[in-house]
Length: 343
Image (cartoon, rainbow, N blue to C red):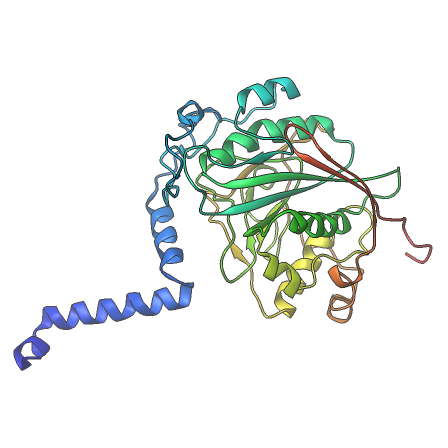
């Protein structure tokens, strides 16, 4: 290389920038992660200009020919902010009619291209039909515009015993992985609806991702720093590395904070969807208002540091009672037992 080029200030600046970008790519986990972060940061998100959740779905149609191309890296039919309202309760028939490409069991593959990503949506469920209908009405078109291959699983606990969301999600992961080698496991509360389809339902390559980073009931902020509730995305490898959720959380709350601790103990960290994209509406038909003050992290009754390796996927016990394909989801009904007398 000629000496004059090495001493040229412009060339030296170019070399410095190139090296910095290369280091950033390695740190962030590959060029795709950097590109996605750059594109998301460049998008203008204006929630005063929202779109109907079924916008652009009429553009979906089977492609001609026998060989489908891969879907584009960035969906051309995504619209960003969505209009979310719970004033009208949609019927199952209406949802089916508006989602003609959703197959039995809540399975969807883009009709016009080969999806680059496969995501399983796992919902622990307990007699919340109103919430379920609203979620299905909004989540199916949301996911289709992202050009994902996906299936929605409903994991239902039999009987009237104390609800155990964490154990039901472990069951859902076990059963979903029997169907397909999913790229991403989305753990999704039934009463949360995303407000922006730029909020991608895909996993981070290296770390568990908290997706519901800005709920309306917390004034679109985290209630506390380690919060991991609502909607989260983990690869099967992430999930097994931290031994899944604990099976011993009966009743409401606590398991998400246990997971945040498990992630750290397993040598990982939490990454979050930016607040401007990770916005969610919270359904609550039992209260007049959907807002509440941010809260502090509740004190744990479990010694996670001592129990996480023994309480989780490796100790999961349940009885599968039925597995039924409904038009909009796959229903898994299980007997997971009852609260132990010493709990």
